[in-house]
Image 1 (cartoon, helix red, strand yellow):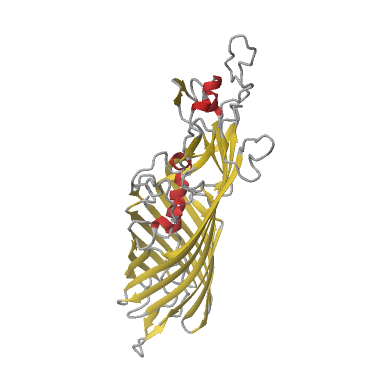
Image 2: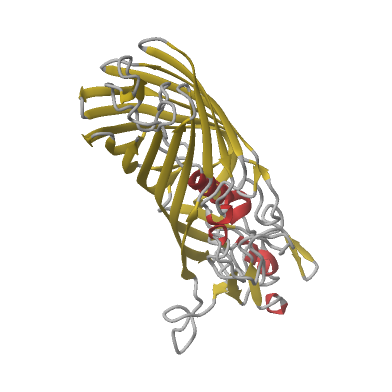
Length: 473
């Protein structure tokens, strides 16, 4: 009966049916990072030989789909150093000329209420390196995914994982494919910051990131032959399924894919104005507008515009304190939608906050420490759950004995596998920012900083180092 079924089975990794709007359609190789996961098994999906059934494809729809969108979203919304100048200018009451303030050199991943000064210019160049190693606390080096099979009818007999799953006709439905997936995502980001003082109270800024993104996946797949039928096997390759004189089934295979892209990310435009201040304390209001100039399908852009109004409260002293609170509203992007249909959904909104202090050690050295965080609302998340396999058949009759034949009517205990699942919820991303600013000469500043993760919300890197140089005039 099984040999009457199709001999070639295609598990379409991104979708069972290729829709016209599919961003990663079957049979078409894509050079976009968003298609790296769907096409890791090749442009035609995972090809098995002697296949009598079709496995459910839950890699994107219920297992790694949130991984794909979360990594894409986070790589496009990276933490950026403040475009606020480390050197501010004040008017000398005697000479009536602007002079550099004798003050702290300012925060690094935060902001302060002071502006640079009328017609002053700040130029900054920074580099940061990100190596993501977890997603919602799940190790990216060991992502478990199990492919099961849908209910189907074979030769007029309904075979179901919850109903009829015995006998030679339906025994095949007990088989599963277990995969362990290793994902590597590294980003080298260079950020150019430009600020200009329109007045003594208002600054305008632009933040321009250039990203180099490298992404690789290795999927180690194993067919679990619970049916004892050997009906499922991978295509024969060197060292697998080629043992002579009798060819053995190929039940394990390793697939891999890697891609590297570069380009300009989303540009952020900022306006900040001091609303109130006295000799030591200041309050500023600002607005960030993120322009979707990056390539979202290559994870170097969010694919949608975003606006973030924010407020900054700071106090100047030998230990200068500062607090920033903002709320980011985003538009609709393919990164939040379903890549199998090309649909768009709204990127999640975020409450952003940071607070800390910069410590004026000497006139040429400032240390900075800040808590930097984001509260991400109603976003897809990933967790590890369990998948119970149907017990393996104990003989080739798989629980149904033909008349006059003695066989087993029981099954082996079913294995319980780890499996990724998705949910929707709010989560927090918190990091500790530790850095120093050094002023070797005049208004030239050198910056060194590291962001250390404090929790596991979303895609995370353990530490994000940053170096930079800036000049004000």
